[in-house]
Structures are given as structure tokens and as C-alpha cells.
Image (cartoon, rainbow, N blue to C red; front, side, top):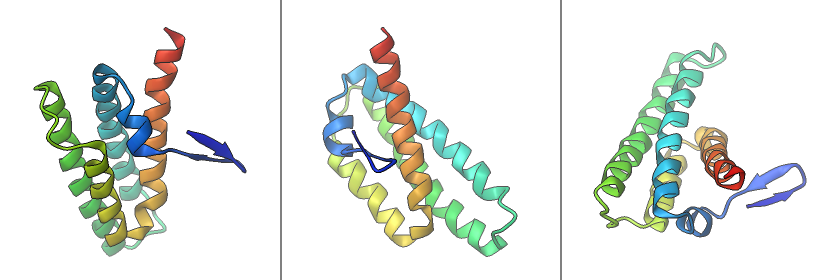
Length: 122
């Protein structure tokens, strides 16, 4: 993770991929939770039109579907989809709805930070 100019950057493939299997699973569990919080934020955003809310929630749902599937696969010790695959999937859905970019970045980075904070505290 790189902190520069007040922004935090995450090299998703390298950094998430380097987590232990247990912490990688925890990362995806936290990410799934954070994405549900993002849906709530979209739903309650009074500055958005209903059509904008639906569009954003549609793509968030697709990402959450893939993340929860990945979590289930990791629990079975099935590693068919790499972090590069997962990152590509998220980027694809963000390309379909660029307005989600900041929310996806925040959910992802805060999930990674939550896992690494708990590792550092141990």
C-alpha cells in the first residue's frame, strides 16, 4: 500500500495476494460486508435520482455476488480464481458504472487495512 499526497493506493493483486489464506478469507468477508454498507449509502443518497441508485446497486450486486462466491471457494480451499481475476472483475464492473469507483476503492482499501491492522496488532 502506498500513501502519497493524502491518497492511499493498494496494489490489489500483490497485496491481497500476499495475505495468508486465513487473512485473505477475512479480507473478502470484510469486503463483502463493506460493499453492503456501500449499497446502503447509495440507497440513502438523496442527491441521486432513483435511476442512478438502481444502476449503481445493480453493479454493486454483481460485485458482491462474485465476492461472496470467492469467499465460499476460499473456505473450500478452492483457488480457481486468482486475485488478478477478482481485480479484473471489479474493474470491469466499475468500467460499466464509473460513478462507483470511489466507493469500491474505499471498501477495498478499508477492508485491507482492517485485516492488516489486526495482523499488526497480533
